[in-house]
Image 1 (cartoon, one colour):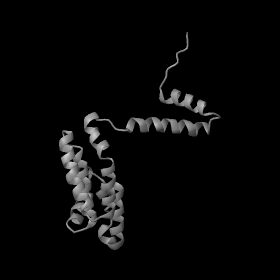
Image 2 (cartoon, helix red, strand yellow):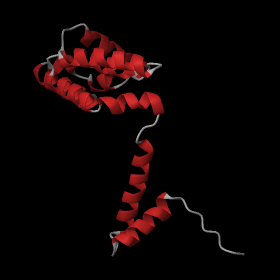
Image 3 (cartoon, helix red, strand yellow):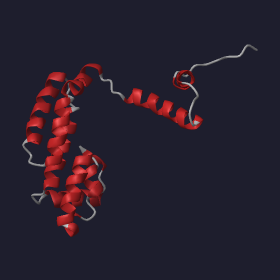
Image 4 (tube, helix red, strand yellow):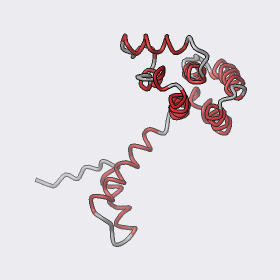
Length: 160
């Protein structure tokens, strides 16, 4: 959603360069993390009827889905968000809405398990770093063994 918001902002910045000046990070940050100047810029720009302001509000509404206490409430919020996003007439936001629709069950599954794929991404990062460090392995068996050694955090204690 942040990428879509950035694209919308950049598009409008071409039409209104002076008005949009200094707004990039104001739209990307969460409201509680804004500096005083960014907050003023955001309030000023949201008073105009800009696509960027609408996209920003849609982004915040999507974040609110994850604060739902139950899966059922989250599904209600997500349905409302999807309806708003798909009717927004902002192509980039509509693309995000379609992506959310394709991953609907996975998004809602988070409320049951509270798990993300962050752990798998971290292991993948370790394996990719191992591959780069070695500049290649002769066989896939060697790569797999190194992946187990690095990502498995195995401890080999030598007898003393």
